[in-house]
Image (tube, rainbow, N blue to C red; front, side):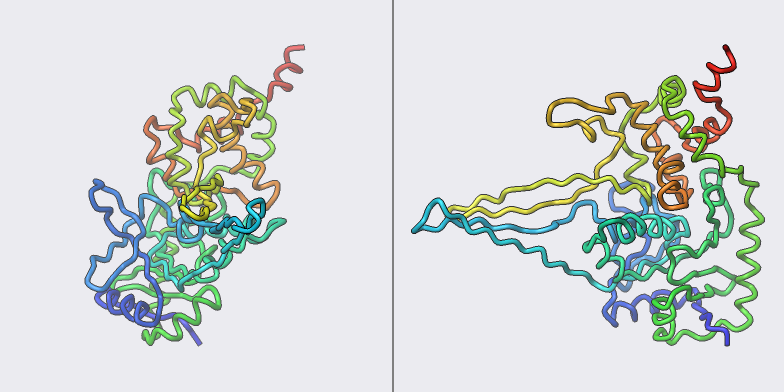
Length: 363
Protein backbone atom coordinates (compact mmCIF):
# COMPACT_ATOMS: atom_id res chain seq x y z
CA UNK A 1 0.00 0.00 0.00
CA UNK A 2 1.25 3.48 -0.87
CA UNK A 3 2.20 5.25 2.35
CA UNK A 4 2.69 8.68 0.74
CA UNK A 5 0.63 11.50 2.20
CA UNK A 6 -0.75 14.69 0.69
CA UNK A 7 -0.37 18.14 2.24
CA UNK A 8 -2.58 20.81 0.70
CA UNK A 9 -0.93 24.19 0.26
CA UNK A 10 -3.46 25.94 2.49
CA UNK A 11 -3.03 23.29 5.22
CA UNK A 12 0.70 23.80 5.84
CA UNK A 13 0.11 26.13 8.78
CA UNK A 14 -2.24 23.69 10.50
CA UNK A 15 0.18 20.82 9.86
CA UNK A 16 3.07 22.69 11.47
CA UNK A 17 0.88 23.91 14.35
CA UNK A 18 -0.10 20.31 15.16
CA UNK A 19 3.55 19.31 15.22
CA UNK A 20 4.19 22.05 17.77
CA UNK A 21 1.22 20.87 19.83
CA UNK A 22 2.70 17.36 19.98
CA UNK A 23 5.97 18.67 21.40
CA UNK A 24 8.11 19.48 18.37
CA UNK A 25 10.02 22.67 17.82
CA UNK A 26 9.57 23.54 14.14
CA UNK A 27 12.23 25.33 12.12
CA UNK A 28 11.41 26.63 8.67
CA UNK A 29 12.80 29.27 6.27
CA UNK A 30 12.11 32.82 7.45
CA UNK A 31 13.28 36.27 6.45
CA UNK A 32 16.02 37.50 8.75
CA UNK A 33 14.95 40.71 10.44
CA UNK A 34 17.09 43.69 9.53
CA UNK A 35 19.09 41.84 6.88
CA UNK A 36 18.17 42.45 3.27
CA UNK A 37 17.45 39.38 1.14
CA UNK A 38 18.51 36.96 3.86
CA UNK A 39 16.54 33.81 4.65
CA UNK A 40 17.44 31.68 7.65
CA UNK A 41 16.00 28.63 9.41
CA UNK A 42 14.35 29.85 12.61
CA UNK A 43 11.66 28.58 15.02
CA UNK A 44 8.18 28.98 13.57
CA UNK A 45 5.02 29.87 15.46
CA UNK A 46 1.44 29.73 14.30
CA UNK A 47 0.48 32.81 12.33
CA UNK A 48 3.97 33.47 10.98
CA UNK A 49 4.64 33.62 7.27
CA UNK A 50 5.62 30.31 5.71
CA UNK A 51 8.43 30.58 3.20
CA UNK A 52 9.62 27.83 0.89
CA UNK A 53 12.70 29.72 -0.32
CA UNK A 54 16.16 28.21 -0.25
CA UNK A 55 17.83 29.58 2.87
CA UNK A 56 20.88 31.83 2.69
CA UNK A 57 22.64 29.77 5.37
CA UNK A 58 22.37 26.00 5.76
CA UNK A 59 20.52 24.59 8.82
CA UNK A 60 23.73 23.02 10.15
CA UNK A 61 23.25 24.83 13.48
CA UNK A 62 20.45 22.44 14.43
CA UNK A 63 22.99 19.66 14.97
CA UNK A 64 26.17 21.70 15.33
CA UNK A 65 25.32 25.05 16.99
CA UNK A 66 27.39 28.08 16.12
CA UNK A 67 28.44 28.13 19.77
CA UNK A 68 27.52 25.58 22.44
CA UNK A 69 28.38 24.82 26.05
CA UNK A 70 30.14 21.45 26.34
CA UNK A 71 30.22 21.60 30.11
CA UNK A 72 30.11 23.94 33.09
CA UNK A 73 32.61 23.74 35.91
CA UNK A 74 32.81 24.99 39.47
CA UNK A 75 36.02 25.27 41.52
CA UNK A 76 35.59 25.69 45.27
CA UNK A 77 38.43 26.00 47.77
CA UNK A 78 38.15 24.09 51.02
CA UNK A 79 38.13 26.74 53.80
CA UNK A 80 39.82 24.32 56.23
CA UNK A 81 42.43 23.21 53.68
CA UNK A 82 43.05 26.15 51.28
CA UNK A 83 45.41 24.06 49.17
CA UNK A 84 42.53 21.69 48.39
CA UNK A 85 40.21 22.59 45.54
CA UNK A 86 36.99 20.74 44.79
CA UNK A 87 36.05 20.69 41.11
CA UNK A 88 32.61 19.72 39.82
CA UNK A 89 31.54 19.37 36.21
CA UNK A 90 28.09 19.50 34.64
CA UNK A 91 28.03 18.08 31.12
CA UNK A 92 24.31 17.31 31.04
CA UNK A 93 22.78 17.55 27.58
CA UNK A 94 19.31 18.68 26.66
CA UNK A 95 17.62 18.21 23.30
CA UNK A 96 14.12 18.95 22.06
CA UNK A 97 12.29 16.96 19.36
CA UNK A 98 12.74 19.16 16.30
CA UNK A 99 11.27 19.23 12.81
CA UNK A 100 13.18 20.95 10.05
CA UNK A 101 10.59 21.92 7.46
CA UNK A 102 11.36 22.75 3.81
CA UNK A 103 15.07 22.07 3.86
CA UNK A 104 16.59 21.38 0.45
CA UNK A 105 18.22 18.10 -0.62
CA UNK A 106 21.65 19.74 -0.42
CA UNK A 107 20.90 20.76 3.19
CA UNK A 108 19.78 17.24 4.14
CA UNK A 109 22.81 15.70 2.45
CA UNK A 110 24.92 18.04 4.55
CA UNK A 111 23.65 16.22 7.65
CA UNK A 112 24.65 12.88 6.11
CA UNK A 113 28.15 14.25 5.43
CA UNK A 114 28.47 15.51 9.02
CA UNK A 115 27.17 12.22 10.41
CA UNK A 116 30.22 10.27 9.26
CA UNK A 117 32.95 12.02 11.29
CA UNK A 118 30.66 12.86 14.23
CA UNK A 119 28.86 9.53 14.57
CA UNK A 120 30.97 6.94 12.76
CA UNK A 121 34.50 8.10 13.49
CA UNK A 122 36.87 6.95 16.21
CA UNK A 123 34.86 8.88 18.80
CA UNK A 124 31.10 9.32 18.66
CA UNK A 125 30.20 12.90 19.58
CA UNK A 126 27.44 12.70 22.23
CA UNK A 127 26.35 16.32 21.81
CA UNK A 128 25.90 15.99 18.06
CA UNK A 129 24.34 12.53 18.38
CA UNK A 130 21.62 13.65 20.77
CA UNK A 131 20.54 16.57 18.57
CA UNK A 132 20.72 14.47 15.41
CA UNK A 133 18.54 11.80 16.95
CA UNK A 134 15.96 14.42 17.96
CA UNK A 135 15.84 15.95 14.46
CA UNK A 136 13.33 14.99 11.76
CA UNK A 137 14.16 16.45 8.35
CA UNK A 138 11.35 17.30 5.90
CA UNK A 139 13.04 18.11 2.62
CA UNK A 140 11.45 20.04 -0.23
CA UNK A 141 12.70 18.64 -3.53
CA UNK A 142 13.87 21.21 -6.05
CA UNK A 143 11.77 21.82 -9.16
CA UNK A 144 14.80 22.71 -11.31
CA UNK A 145 18.49 23.44 -11.17
CA UNK A 146 20.04 26.91 -11.08
CA UNK A 147 23.30 28.52 -12.17
CA UNK A 148 25.12 28.13 -8.86
CA UNK A 149 23.81 24.70 -7.82
CA UNK A 150 25.83 21.61 -8.69
CA UNK A 151 24.42 18.88 -6.45
CA UNK A 152 24.46 16.37 -9.32
CA UNK A 153 28.23 16.89 -9.67
CA UNK A 154 28.75 15.46 -6.19
CA UNK A 155 26.55 12.37 -6.41
CA UNK A 156 23.25 13.90 -5.32
CA UNK A 157 20.42 15.66 -7.15
CA UNK A 158 17.26 17.78 -6.85
CA UNK A 159 15.36 14.92 -5.19
CA UNK A 160 18.20 13.11 -3.41
CA UNK A 161 16.84 11.41 -0.26
CA UNK A 162 20.20 11.22 1.56
CA UNK A 163 19.94 12.75 5.04
CA UNK A 164 16.17 13.27 4.78
CA UNK A 165 13.43 11.61 6.80
CA UNK A 166 10.62 12.80 4.53
CA UNK A 167 10.73 14.08 0.95
CA UNK A 168 8.19 16.74 -0.04
CA UNK A 169 7.49 17.20 -3.73
CA UNK A 170 5.43 20.13 -4.94
CA UNK A 171 2.58 19.49 -7.36
CA UNK A 172 -0.27 21.74 -8.50
CA UNK A 173 -2.53 21.27 -5.47
CA UNK A 174 0.11 21.04 -2.76
CA UNK A 175 2.81 18.59 -1.72
CA UNK A 176 3.27 14.84 -1.75
CA UNK A 177 5.12 13.62 1.35
CA UNK A 178 7.15 10.43 1.07
CA UNK A 179 8.69 8.82 4.17
CA UNK A 180 12.34 7.83 3.74
CA UNK A 181 13.23 6.63 7.25
CA UNK A 182 11.40 5.01 10.13
CA UNK A 183 11.45 8.39 11.86
CA UNK A 184 9.67 9.89 8.85
CA UNK A 185 7.14 7.04 8.70
CA UNK A 186 6.27 7.57 12.36
CA UNK A 187 5.71 11.29 11.88
CA UNK A 188 3.53 10.81 8.79
CA UNK A 189 1.52 8.04 10.42
CA UNK A 190 0.66 10.39 13.29
CA UNK A 191 -0.05 13.39 11.05
CA UNK A 192 -3.57 12.34 9.98
CA UNK A 193 -2.81 13.69 6.52
CA UNK A 194 -4.75 12.00 3.70
CA UNK A 195 -3.05 9.41 1.52
CA UNK A 196 -1.58 10.80 -1.67
CA UNK A 197 -3.02 8.11 -3.93
CA UNK A 198 -2.64 8.97 -7.62
CA UNK A 199 -0.94 12.25 -6.69
CA UNK A 200 2.23 10.23 -6.07
CA UNK A 201 2.52 9.75 -9.84
CA UNK A 202 2.41 13.53 -10.31
CA UNK A 203 5.21 13.86 -7.77
CA UNK A 204 7.29 11.28 -9.63
CA UNK A 205 6.81 13.22 -12.86
CA UNK A 206 7.80 16.47 -11.14
CA UNK A 207 11.02 14.91 -9.81
CA UNK A 208 11.90 13.52 -13.24
CA UNK A 209 11.35 16.95 -14.82
CA UNK A 210 13.71 18.49 -12.25
CA UNK A 211 16.45 16.04 -13.17
CA UNK A 212 15.91 16.70 -16.86
CA UNK A 213 16.41 20.43 -16.32
CA UNK A 214 20.02 19.89 -15.22
CA UNK A 215 22.99 20.26 -17.50
CA UNK A 216 25.21 17.22 -17.80
CA UNK A 217 27.62 16.95 -14.88
CA UNK A 218 31.35 16.50 -15.44
CA UNK A 219 32.98 13.27 -14.32
CA UNK A 220 34.63 13.97 -10.95
CA UNK A 221 35.66 10.38 -10.25
CA UNK A 222 39.33 11.32 -10.70
CA UNK A 223 39.09 14.47 -8.57
CA UNK A 224 40.52 12.90 -5.38
CA UNK A 225 43.60 11.65 -7.21
CA UNK A 226 44.12 14.79 -9.31
CA UNK A 227 43.81 17.10 -6.31
CA UNK A 228 46.35 14.97 -4.47
CA UNK A 229 48.70 15.33 -7.45
CA UNK A 230 48.52 19.14 -7.44
CA UNK A 231 48.59 19.39 -3.65
CA UNK A 232 52.21 20.60 -3.64
CA UNK A 233 51.82 22.79 -6.73
CA UNK A 234 52.06 26.22 -5.09
CA UNK A 235 51.67 28.03 -8.41
CA UNK A 236 48.34 26.31 -9.00
CA UNK A 237 46.90 27.28 -5.62
CA UNK A 238 48.26 30.81 -5.65
CA UNK A 239 46.72 31.38 -9.08
CA UNK A 240 43.29 30.30 -7.86
CA UNK A 241 43.42 32.25 -4.60
CA UNK A 242 44.83 35.59 -5.75
CA UNK A 243 41.50 37.33 -5.18
CA UNK A 244 40.60 35.49 -1.94
CA UNK A 245 40.03 37.78 1.07
CA UNK A 246 40.26 34.96 3.65
CA UNK A 247 36.91 36.20 5.01
CA UNK A 248 35.60 32.69 5.63
CA UNK A 249 32.14 33.41 4.21
CA UNK A 250 32.32 30.19 2.19
CA UNK A 251 32.75 28.12 5.35
CA UNK A 252 30.04 29.79 7.42
CA UNK A 253 27.29 29.30 4.81
CA UNK A 254 28.42 25.75 3.98
CA UNK A 255 26.25 22.80 5.11
CA UNK A 256 29.27 20.48 5.42
CA UNK A 257 32.12 22.51 6.98
CA UNK A 258 32.71 21.46 10.57
CA UNK A 259 35.89 23.19 11.77
CA UNK A 260 35.55 24.41 15.35
CA UNK A 261 37.55 25.85 18.21
CA UNK A 262 37.37 25.19 21.96
CA UNK A 263 37.53 28.01 24.50
CA UNK A 264 37.15 28.22 28.27
CA UNK A 265 35.37 31.24 29.69
CA UNK A 266 35.64 32.12 33.37
CA UNK A 267 32.66 33.48 35.27
CA UNK A 268 34.17 35.17 38.32
CA UNK A 269 32.52 34.74 41.71
CA UNK A 270 33.51 36.05 45.13
CA UNK A 271 33.76 32.79 47.03
CA UNK A 272 34.40 30.35 44.17
CA UNK A 273 35.16 30.16 40.48
CA UNK A 274 32.76 29.09 37.74
CA UNK A 275 33.22 28.76 34.03
CA UNK A 276 32.14 27.09 30.82
CA UNK A 277 33.88 25.27 28.02
CA UNK A 278 32.53 26.32 24.62
CA UNK A 279 32.70 24.77 21.19
CA UNK A 280 32.28 27.38 18.44
CA UNK A 281 32.44 27.39 14.67
CA UNK A 282 35.81 28.34 13.23
CA UNK A 283 37.10 28.60 9.69
CA UNK A 284 40.14 26.95 8.15
CA UNK A 285 40.35 29.97 5.83
CA UNK A 286 41.46 32.19 8.73
CA UNK A 287 45.19 32.63 9.29
CA UNK A 288 45.00 32.04 13.04
CA UNK A 289 43.20 28.70 12.66
CA UNK A 290 46.44 26.70 12.48
CA UNK A 291 48.68 29.10 14.38
CA UNK A 292 50.47 27.27 17.17
CA UNK A 293 51.33 28.54 20.65
CA UNK A 294 54.95 28.85 19.57
CA UNK A 295 53.94 31.29 16.84
CA UNK A 296 54.62 28.80 14.06
CA UNK A 297 51.89 28.47 11.45
CA UNK A 298 51.96 25.51 9.04
CA UNK A 299 49.50 27.33 6.74
CA UNK A 300 50.60 30.98 6.71
CA UNK A 301 49.53 31.58 3.12
CA UNK A 302 45.92 31.84 1.94
CA UNK A 303 46.78 29.54 -0.99
CA UNK A 304 47.64 26.81 1.52
CA UNK A 305 44.40 27.35 3.36
CA UNK A 306 42.33 27.18 0.17
CA UNK A 307 44.26 24.05 -0.78
CA UNK A 308 43.25 22.51 2.53
CA UNK A 309 39.58 23.43 2.13
CA UNK A 310 39.18 22.19 -1.45
CA UNK A 311 41.32 19.09 -0.96
CA UNK A 312 39.39 18.09 2.14
CA UNK A 313 36.06 18.26 0.33
CA UNK A 314 37.12 16.53 -2.87
CA UNK A 315 40.14 14.39 -1.91
CA UNK A 316 40.84 13.54 1.73
CA UNK A 317 37.21 13.20 2.87
CA UNK A 318 36.40 10.88 -0.08
CA UNK A 319 39.50 8.87 0.75
CA UNK A 320 38.25 8.38 4.31
CA UNK A 321 34.50 8.10 3.76
CA UNK A 322 33.92 7.24 0.10
CA UNK A 323 31.93 10.38 -0.78
CA UNK A 324 32.59 14.05 -1.47
CA UNK A 325 32.33 16.42 1.49
CA UNK A 326 30.33 18.84 -0.64
CA UNK A 327 26.61 18.78 -1.28
CA UNK A 328 26.79 21.13 -4.27
CA UNK A 329 24.48 23.72 -2.72
CA UNK A 330 26.42 26.56 -4.37
CA UNK A 331 26.23 28.88 -1.36
CA UNK A 332 30.00 29.38 -1.35
CA UNK A 333 29.75 30.50 -4.98
CA UNK A 334 26.79 32.80 -4.35
CA UNK A 335 28.18 34.50 -1.26
CA UNK A 336 31.86 34.83 -2.09
CA UNK A 337 32.51 38.60 -2.25
CA UNK A 338 35.12 38.18 -5.01
CA UNK A 339 33.37 35.47 -7.03
CA UNK A 340 35.65 32.48 -6.40
CA UNK A 341 34.04 29.30 -7.70
CA UNK A 342 35.02 25.96 -6.16
CA UNK A 343 33.79 24.20 -9.30
CA UNK A 344 36.36 26.02 -11.41
CA UNK A 345 39.15 25.01 -9.03
CA UNK A 346 38.18 21.33 -9.12
CA UNK A 347 37.86 21.33 -12.91
CA UNK A 348 41.24 23.06 -13.21
CA UNK A 349 42.79 20.37 -11.01
CA UNK A 350 41.29 17.68 -13.24
CA UNK A 351 42.88 19.32 -16.29
CA UNK A 352 46.22 20.13 -14.65
CA UNK A 353 49.47 18.25 -14.90
CA UNK A 354 51.35 17.79 -11.66
CA UNK A 355 54.77 19.40 -11.08
CA UNK A 356 56.28 15.92 -11.23
CA UNK A 357 54.71 15.28 -14.64
CA UNK A 358 55.86 18.64 -15.95
CA UNK A 359 59.42 17.95 -14.76
CA UNK A 360 59.36 14.54 -16.40
CA UNK A 361 58.10 16.01 -19.68
CA UNK A 362 60.79 18.70 -19.63
CA UNK A 363 63.66 16.25 -19.03
